[in-house]
Image 1: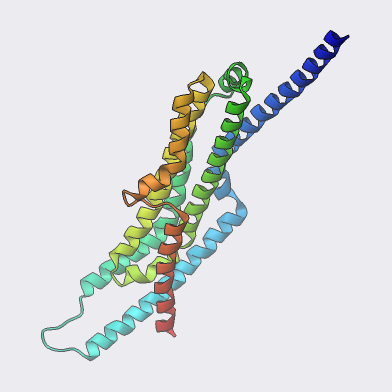
Image 2: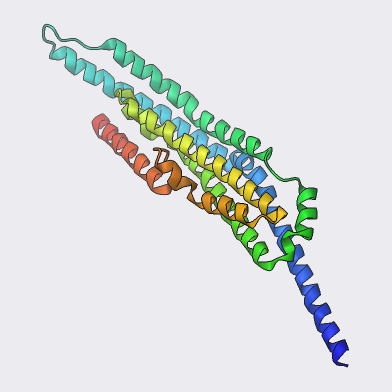
Length: 270
């Protein structure tokens, strides 16, 4: 009787364990499939496209306002003209052309770069059938490793959400940088480019480390898995030491600085 009870209990818990493993496997594969579509599907959204079209319109309005302010400044300089002094029309024209090029190209370049990064990282993804076969044989036999894989997968998904959202912010806030570029502040354009590149590099390195860790987990290489995924959580801090900050704080700080220049332009125009 006790043997039958033990067999029944083992069968019950074995069935629960199998269901848990199956649910965990399906969840991981679902998240991975979302990752492969996220960077492209987001920017194909009608609402996102409309929002970016609207912010591009704002960029042109700000450019027009900055051009008017520039003409007023030129008028003041000509009115107070002194021998030996003059207006640097070549510099002014160059800044104007750079601003137009920035407004025209920057938002689309940021989005295209993100989509190319997603396409490139898609080549590093693990084949679905291979993943399922290896997971059933190695990964899901160990509950602790299964939970670690789930945590790493969800964490990477959140990181990817932030990367896509960060690129969206970069594309949508181009108008904030227009006044500084018109004034010849080249660091404004450089800051935008560095921030965009930092977001993309962080995304690429995190994806690479995630795939390395996942492949190591499937093969039972716990040490490689641990190194890859611990490093994945530290990529932003490591890149920040080289001046490539993709963190939320750095993005807010740079956007706030650009916003101050935008407010100054509005006050000048009024």
